Image (cartoon, helix red, strand yellow):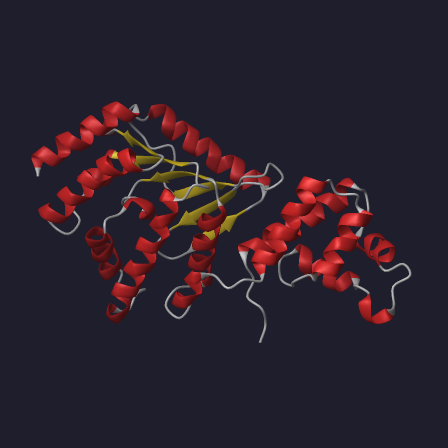
Length: 289
């Protein structure tokens, strides 16, 4: 059975490729230096290295150690590479749900498990990390074209388990921008919506979460996609953007799309209400229900 491509394996491959490029070596030259004085059975092929760099294939600890030696990688980054290789081979708890969610959603959970920060922009519904279970169940249940009714509970379980990341010590914080339309859209009736809005207030008190509301008065939206920009603890780990829509989920790691979505987020944040005023608006909407 082919191994599942993971975000961790893609991140590892991306770092190896960047280190190789910095050393001004092509894949053939790197492999040639790695394989020097090695018996045939312990050599790495350029074709396999190519698959490793794209995240399709795994790499052994021995081969990674030789790459680190040839490229003269500093100790801190070498340790990070080794940890990333080890974790790429570990099954994640989210794989329990692989029979009901696409690979892109599994990757979203995996990204969130490793990310230290998250910046989200949502203009339709409340960000998944901030949803109550009742609110989530309504949204999942309404997506009948994509989710079987018998899987609603398990999908909600997955979403709730993702939220545990907010309380872990290694998570530094979430900054969420929600449009005013999000908090005014009636999802599941008054009680469900009131509890959801109350949760948006409480979650900022319990976890490193900041919520900003982009009011109707701000005018035209800076973007129409709903997305999350994830940041990682090490500077050599680039940011990752997860974009969500009804028909597709996309993951971007390349510099240009990451920069574009960062610009949209920054523009939305600049137009949004400060955190305290956002909480006041959320309370005002609750009173209207």
